[in-house]
Image (spheres, one colour):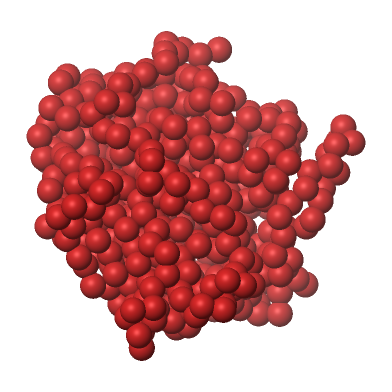
Length: 527
């Protein structure tokens, strides 16, 4: 089944895995769903039981996240070792109810290509002597030398279709497998939550087994209020695998539809009895605010202002272009328009992407797309949710924007572009080539699909021939919404060799097994 599959192992000696004191603090006790633990309530000291995260790490910067159980002042210390000798102190904000007790501290001027150990301390804003137990983590800044390689993982779709944290299975086990492989960062390709998917206490599987879920009040219904969206993001942090992972692996996070509602688009009015708020724009604004509170994203403030799309520079080998195919799209339709300036990206985001790709000097330019290009993703019987709409001819509808982008990449001789995505709940690899396409004015490229992290599996979708895709690998279930107990969950892995500059993409399942591997050569416009 696998084409050129290889283990692709890497020695971990160049960078320490969490151990000792760091591992102990990362393995936090399950947070109290209703607030502070009894002991903390007695002492009045702030608690950071929801763990720590770091996001959008570059050669010299990172953004540290924490959540308190009460108002607190956030302080971060960084050091080269776990002993925190010669630590540097970063004074963060006073965090409170306005951000659901989450806080961010920006770290700048860090040494490049180094392992950074950090600890977050929360103190009573009125009495700095009353501090909670520090929570520690670690991450590696991006290198400035090309000789140092890069490894990262990507996937998406968490707690979807009612498959939540199952204590009988050890929770979100895929995060422990990814943590064990010690990537430089994790790219989450969207659907970090399923705001439209309630979590019930149990689900009976087709073979009679019972799937049990951890449940919370906020996840008992679809999310409409800001409190319910916050609760949906907080739900996943009840999983100790995810909290351990967050304490070791920095993230680059994007969003897609289920952060709000399945297949949503701006201006949509809902015909769904589960919702009292029918205006999707209202729901999206509430979700974006909670999204900004719960993930460390450089371009998005905790109040929901700013934007999700951005480029994260990870040294000379890699730039990651994070797209937002949700916020600026037009309404889902049959996709047969002969002119479509808005498309799926919006005109301004497309201009930004073309400009930043042209400016990039990185060897590899990963385009993190929250939706696939050539897979036909339906929205009902006559509308389409992604780019492709099943017509294999010349570009129409949203395909027009992609054609414009691909033409730009070819004519500007932009090398090393690779597309990564999730969304469809199976794993596959597509190679796009103008020799097979109706639209010819582009150079060949690869698109790799992974996921879900912990959600239902779904059968494969048809390919649209407009950009000439050929499916080189596919693994998908043969029926809809198979549980994580029935079919594997998936993540992808990118390894960039510091010496040769070669990029190897591997599609893995939750056991770590490599299903497919493809190595690409640097310095080429097409592959």
